Image 1 (cartoon, rainbow, N blue to C red):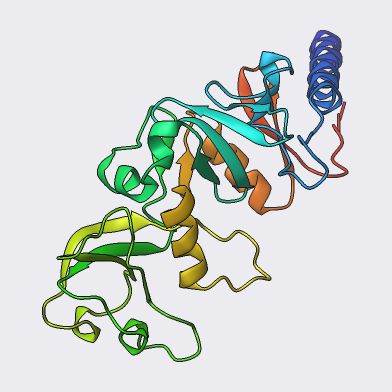
Image 2 (cartoon, rainbow, N blue to C red):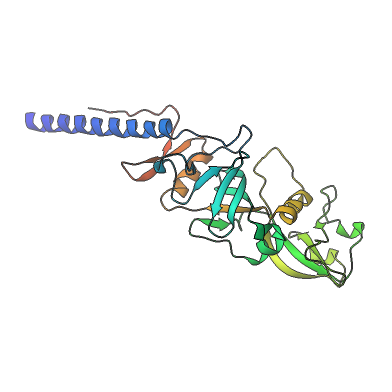
Length: 266
């Protein structure tokens, strides 16, 4: 009986020490990897992202960001090249980016609509984002023909897009939720499934025309990120209002629950 009690106490002490060390290590993460911004108005950078100047353990592989001289948040995407990050949503794992490379700025919508942007980490947000279609018409539409089926929500058709149109064809960006019958009979879809930049501000009501102009002028698009053993943990953590971190000892992401304490019972 005495030997069993000694073993139980030793196990409790050992377990207490391990838990204290783990809790201390988890706490050190948020001290060493505090959230940051490239500017006062810039998007917040925190795990699973990190700045290039931060320790590697502060972020997940492939989710490294940098600050430009203009204090913009910059992502080096394997396909898009250098991109300006305009928004990050940690609850749903999405970010809006604008390509900065010259080859993407000449006619950005053409490149966005014909290029596969999927990589090992980043995937176009084809699930939660708003979708649009490129349509071609043989004549230029008059303003009343650009109105959709939802009154008060602005036009559902934007264009013509100058870099894609000429005297014999006029290319427009059309809200993907609108039926084709609102267009003249000579109009046809030339490309579908074009992603609109997501609006992560739940208080705002961004119209389709605003999103469409951002895509046409800048090629802004929405990507999601995926890192094994990290993404799901962090998304669930953020949606519940907690902070996500990374334990170097356990080699996995963890959720910091506010006010949580290690409780040891001997």
